[in-house]
Length: 386
Ligand SMILES: *Cc1c(COP(=O)(O)O)cnc(C)c1O
Image 1 (cartoon, helix red, strand yellow):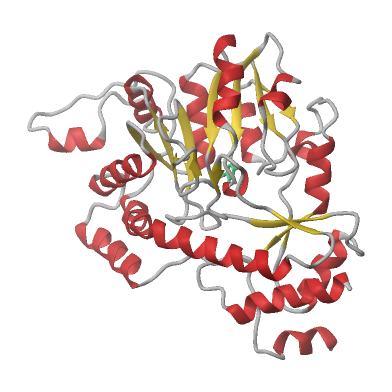
Image 2: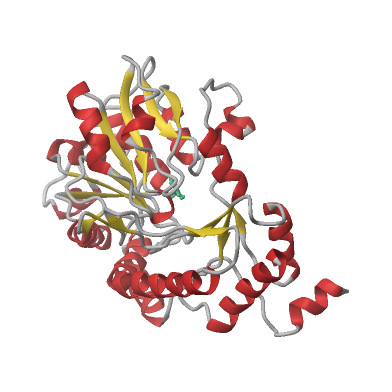
């Protein structure tokens, strides 16, 4: 009874995340449907162009998800059986899974406490002569120190791929994350900053990689549907290698084009809400909130707090208290090495990863979060901390 009463007392439930979608998105999707071209077509091409311009990349190739994008990125640089790829365990499990899809071995590196990201030092600690690539995550939108890690990788011939699933709209040294990246993969899942329902993108500086990515997402076919459509002669396609169906639809791209135009407004709003959380939580003992690193800015795709030794109750007790008051929070970022699916993967000690995954909470943060809702989240944390 108490729980039910708590939930209704302000007529308020606070979800952890809600995508920012409006009438413009709805009419853009309707226009795609009315056009009759609903699979990959002109809207996907336009979305790719707009996305490349947004992040400062030479090429952008739309795919069905960030996960499939990571699979293709590892494929185009030739990672395979016998290779090792350094990944953070502290990430959504797709990061690790993509390495397993190509038959390579994921090698877990620890992260730094402040950002939850790999560093040149944590990568160096686990690199071996078999290391072919590093899969660097910008966790929850917090940029990782790309140049420092590239400084480790380049002289050793190790490729660097960015898992930028959460990071559109974040900046690194004054430029968009992903600017001139050799290979970066992005997500448009509704839990991320801009959404297409499901969807992803791979950006690259290499025309050769871009061509191969386009072919691999489309069954390894020698001509694209758009080229065949535009041709006045019959086109006999060939299948040049083992490919996949990892395409995005024009319905999704129509949504993405509108969302991408909203990106500055979406990021501004998230940073404003994060600043308000910072203020409200500043004097709560034992709560350490994620902030911008010295070299960049986060889009606050996730707003997490670390509960340190001064916080009087366990992380799970806090999650329960929040739930009792109608607030949907989440445990912190998962650690892949603790999951049954990864039981067969050996790894060294990952103390920071384990501390972060066990002691962090992701708080509600979305475009239409009201001050009243935010106050409620903080009130619950305050009452538990007392
Ligand atoms: C969400 C996420 C993914 C997977 O993205 P999808 O588009 O859902 O496949 C991969 N890596 C990270 C770090 C993520 O947060």
